[in-house]
Each structure stands twice: as structure tokens, then as C-alpha cells.
Amino acid sequence: MDKKILLAYLNWFYTLELEQVTLYQEQARIVNDDYMSEVLIHLAKIEDGHVQNISESIRQLGANPSRIGGIIGPAVGKPFSELSSLFGIEKMFKVNILLETKASQDYSNLIKRVNDVELLKVLKNNLIEEDLHRSWFITRRNRLKDK
Image 1 (spheres, rainbow, N blue to C red):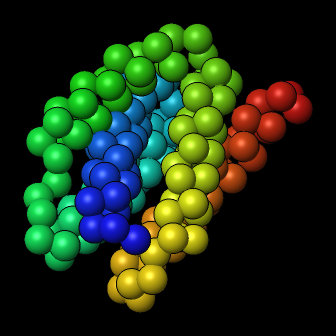
Image 2: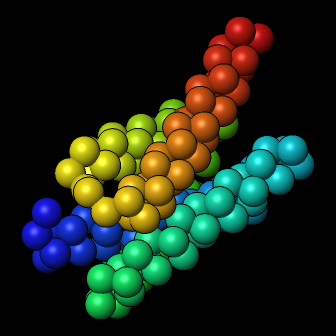
């Protein structure tokens, strides 16, 4: 894969992961459930790990993470969290499921195009965690529906 294209993909993930960090931090602040708040804080920490490992992958390619992504990700995450939380926990879960699904799809697509063994480890690890987050939100949303 062309280095410029790879960097564009990685900077997309950098922005997306920053957005998710802010989203989950803000949702944790807004929700009225202590357990849910702790889960969201934990997820934000995992997403921050993704920010760090994507940043390092970008640096290993001789570039720096996008400054624009560093601004846009958090700027989108904060109001998005307020909107997603405004309509209740079930809608918040739905938004989070959509975001985690998009992240998983994007990681899967990039994994198919990358040959670098070390970068593949990073991408696959992030994909596994995004899938786990998505599954958790689906399970919790379904429990709400069953009540």
C-alpha cells in the first residue's frame, strides 16, 4: 500500500479514536448510573490506548498524527455525546453501536490491505477491542429491551 494512503487511513483512525475517547468520557459524566459511568470511563481508556498505538504507528512511518484530527475528534465527540445521551440510554447505546460497527468495518478493511506484521498486530488488537465494545453495547441494549 502506498505510504500516503496508509497515513491517510491511520490519521482517520487517529481522529475516530480521539472522538471515541471524548464521547465515552462525556457520556460517563452525563449518565446517571454509576456502573455505566465506570464502564464508559474504562472504554475511554481503551480507546485512548488506540490513540496512542495509532500515533506511534504514524510516527514509525516518519510522520506526525494529524493536527486537524487532534482538533476534530474531540470537537465532534463532546456535542455528539450530549446529543446521544439526551434521548436516553437505549439511544446512546444505539449511537455507540453504530460508531463501534463503523470502526470495526474500517479496521477490517485496512487489515486486508496491510502487509506490515507489526502494524497488523496493532490493527487487529484495536479491531478485537472495538468488536468487544460493540458486543457489550448490544448486550446491554438488548437487556433494556427485555425489561
